[in-house]
Image (cartoon, rainbow, N blue to C red; front, side, top):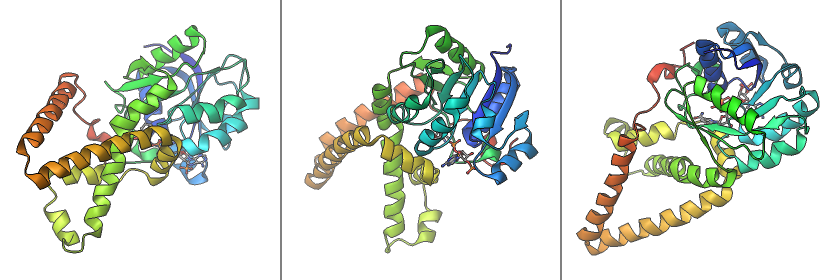
Length: 305
Ligand code: NAP
């Protein structure tokens, strides 16, 4: 693979940005990787690990001369970063982000970017419950999807960013922002909320002790606890920014839950069996599409660099 961007600026140096840096190095996609993060501690850790060629103190400094700028901060922090970098961007630079919500990021960032740049929001559907610069690993995006939202950007700029994500190991899909937010509400955001709730319920239930929950956690609950360990700031921002779609899906979820609750109360085994037969077919579809495994476990110890 050859160089696609001469200088890539990573704003935010957590799980996603550090994984991108490792994957860029693996494939030789960037002439130079420049990074920055909010705190001196994260910048120091990134320097120590060495996944960037240079780590600088501010976002305004990081984007100087960059032909690709990646915003890899929580969704609620995107606007301030956009405002800081807007005046410092080079002509024809592509600006993208990796935020889990797209409409809110477009509304927050686009007004700050000059016309001579290309803003192409993105979302890699890959992650772990770990965060920070030590959590990243080169294989995170392998065989995962990355959704790009061109939002009127030039085709050539979108094709170039698409080739870049493919070089990172991902498959690329193009979508509009509102559809992205609805799809992700179904496949990721609402399931996270349900996992948070279920773990909260177990925690509140005084008749079942904490040690029993830990000792007898079979696969279902154990998976919930892994999801519910995800970063609180990131997920707070996701729900605040994807409010409408989340509320719509939660409304539907509640209706279905009531229907199943009623079937259990009235002893209607047929309803339950039919329902579980339908859902089992969805699981088979996911397996056939090769999307049934988590990303490899390299980052789980938080020490992979
Ligand atoms: P992370 O590991 O927690 O890293 C976040 C980075 O953003 C850190 O460098 C942090 O700086 C910086 N940051 C936090 N708050 C900030 C603020 N108010 N202003 C400026 N910088 C700030 O997060 P991540 O998992 O890489 O997530 C980054 C983005 O990717 C989020 O928008 C998220 O929605 C999206 N995403 C995440 C996943 C996932 O599973 N984790 C998957 C797909 C997309 P300090 O370290 O200095 O505090």
